[in-house]
Length: 284
Figure 1 (cartoon, rainbow, N blue to C red):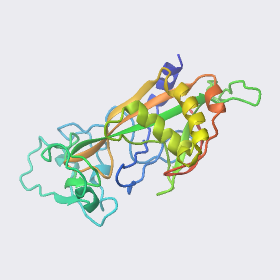
Figure 2 (spheres, one colour):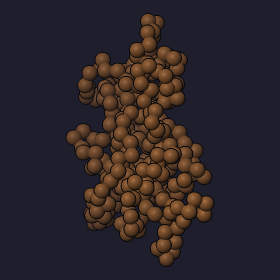
Figure 3 (cartoon, rainbow, N blue to C red):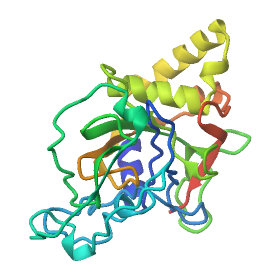
């Protein structure tokens, strides 16, 4: 029931997913959902037209991947007009700039460099700041609970009359934007492990805890992340680090603490890439 309610709430708004690079900390910055009476949104929006498709007809879903300069550099992309985004559109004069960061070149060479961005042209070839050719996978945990009063009763929205859902948001150190915790999937790591690890590092400051504190956090997070969950979004992300040959894909997963007992026993504390962390109301 909680999953269905969350799905309805989140389907009506746009989500911005916070992603972080494994080898290079993010040079681009991501914002969080444009919920009413909340924060301004930027970066990845969760909606039905996140993919521009091969015909380039959905011109608003492939903008950040065409922005200049490329994050962490002074590299300017070749300009790609909306009508020329799709690969099926003939463009004989297309001459994208080539760029792969030196730090990325020093790492392992993954996959096929001839693979093409499924959303279309970006004006830049190479890997940029992304470690792999093709999709670079990320995972983003959306942790929710019901907003409650001091007596533990669920609070109703004064206008809609619905119970208010809250999610955990972080304020990124690199750009000051509010975001959903999350990061890149390490080689050989399961998505479920990435989701739990990133939440612990960014929202609970687990990296700075003692061994005993880490074990306690791990036990509580295991209970939360072992229960039923809802995949909110899985797929391509319109990201300023994307190129014609390398791009970000994410899996945003909701874990809902129905009673609030698990999260009530965990103290939010910003860590790693996060400067601040707090619960945010979803007003719908």
